[in-house]
Amino acid sequence: MTVAPIRVLAVDDSAVARNAYRFLLTPELGFDLVATAPNAEIARKKIAALTPDVVVLDIEMPGEDGLSFLQWLMQHQPTPVVVASSHSSRGAEQTMRAFSLGAIEVVCKGGPAGGSGWGDDFATVLREGVQAAARAGLRMSFRRGGRPAAGATSSPFGHSTPVLPGTLASRPIRRGNCVVIGASTGGPEALSVLVAQMPADFPPTFIVQHMPPLYTRTFAQRLDTLGAVRVKEAEDGEMIGPGQVLVAPGGMQMSMAIGHAGPVARVRKAPPVNRHAPSVDVLFDSAVESYRSRVFGVLLTGMGNDGAAGLLRIREAGGTTVAQDEASCVVYGMPQEAAKCGAASKILPLVEILPWMLTQLVER
Image 1 (cartoon, one colour):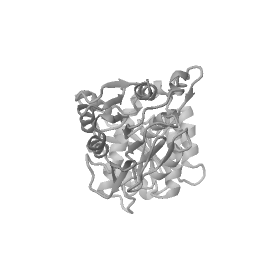
Image 2: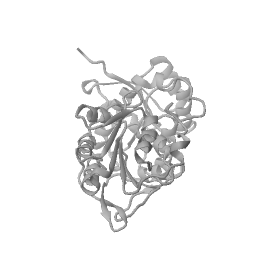
Image 3: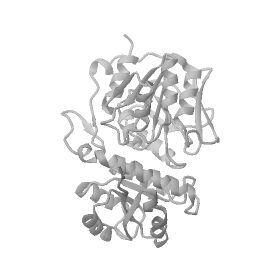
Image 4: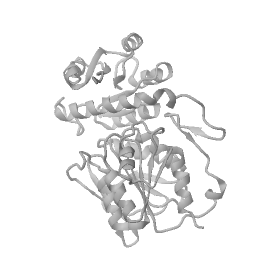
């Protein structure tokens, strides 16, 4: 059966960028660039007329900026959006805001390391980002429908965040465990939901989110504002304790080891694993070596299979494993691979993962 190409609208004030998309998103590769637009006003008209599957959006545009346009789009004609951002601190800050408004994925113009060209690296991440966004589009209609339950808050992705039962919130958490979490496409908002629920004595936690350099620091700073735990981008040799969370730096591999007073982050420049740096499998494997059965492994929404093998090794070592369910994932790729190989002892909706983990972690 022939698969229809993904219909894409590219919105960018740069004529160079718009021309590049014509060469990078071709029918031979499964894409149909139905139109380009140099600004938000023209983009609105073309979206209404063409109803593309995915929008590739530049944030920094003259006149109405990309963030304002994104907010309008999600309110009036929800469409999966891939943000094409500059590789800069300002670009990172804007992209975090774009995620909170509903963007699915981010790609750095010039490639994952922010080079100046439009070569193979950028072509690969762009195409993968558009494919992931197209998959997410299959669920966007119901994801943004409905209303949060009473007493709950809602994330931009439509997930309701329940208030934790008082019986859990008032009981101390056992010491001696660690938590490792992996995520990719859709991960920024999924992780926001989890981190916001973590109590102040939550076990030391390490996160790998597939994200370019510079962006991970801004992302960690954003997570740090959400709840009781303290979150920062990891540094090599950094020790953490309960109530602390480290995010792997983009472009680096992060593992962990046991120090004299608790877990220690190991951050180094190393080749990609499963095509990713940071890689979820690298983190998960190091957690097994250090903590064996005292590891809690969590695999969230994302495209590909990074983390599935590592989650299986955690389970085989006697650790506790959980994967996000299909209905609450933006892209059911990584958790699906974990489910297929039997790596997850539990498969749960996003909002149920943290409450369930706390039932396993609290003092009895």
